[in-house]
Every structure is written in C-alpha cells, then in structure tokens.
Image 1 (tube, rainbow, N blue to C red):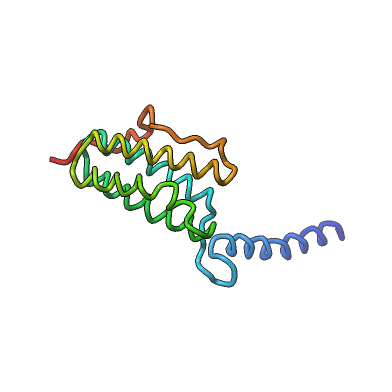
Image 2: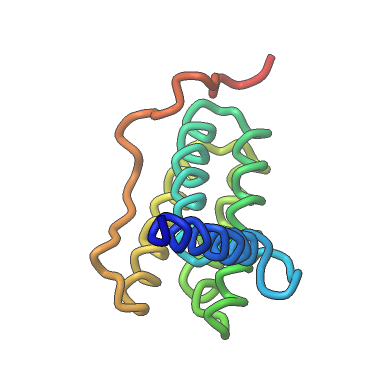
Length: 152
C-alpha cells in the first residue's frame, strides 16, 4: 500500500513539472514568445520552395509572389538566429531575381532564378556544415488538395 501511495504522490508531483516544461517549450522561457528552431523554419522553407516552383511553372504569379515573400521573411529569421548575413549572401541575389521574374511574369527568368535559389540554398548548407542537405527542383507535387493553376 505504501508503494502505491509513493507512486501516486510521485506522479502528482512530476506531472505539473512536465506540463510546465511543455508550456515553456511552446511559449518560450518566462512567458517570452516561442521562437522556432532553425530546423523547423527550414522544413517550412522546403514546403515554400516546392510551392513556389509549382506556382511559377503554372503561371500563378500571385501565389508565387506570396511564397517568395514568405521565403524572404523566414530567411531573415534564420539570419537573426545564426547572426550575420550568411543566408542573405547565399540567396539574396536569387530572391531578387525571382521577384523580378514574378513581377514580369517571365517563366524562363523564373526558372533560371529558381535554380539559382536552389544553388544558393545548397551553398549556404555547405557553409554551415550541412552539405548533406541538397535542394533541387521538385519532381512531383505533394499537395493534391491545392490547385496551382493561374487564376482567371
């Protein structure tokens, strides 16, 4: 019976501590806002990269514009976390070229700039000792629930 009481007491004491740790992980320390880790940001970047490709190839320029803006914001977040302008140096010119291609609705320029973006991502990965992460043009569309057709 004593063993059961000790186990019950331990679970009552451990549960609030575990919940507090989970809350800190979600909200940050001492009520500060949650800051996603670089790996989480980059997983979202990969999704945006895929969506950007299919939007541009489909001539859905508003969606391509939306995705390039989201990529830029998250690249800025990564730069803040790692310090300096490593990401900007690696992908900044390609992002600018993509913005111009999207504004001009130029698929050929878009394709060239997209490939430059992918190369910039890989350059950045190599400089941060993550050369095992290699980005390329998407081969297939994983989003069967979204239409990438240009709006009419």
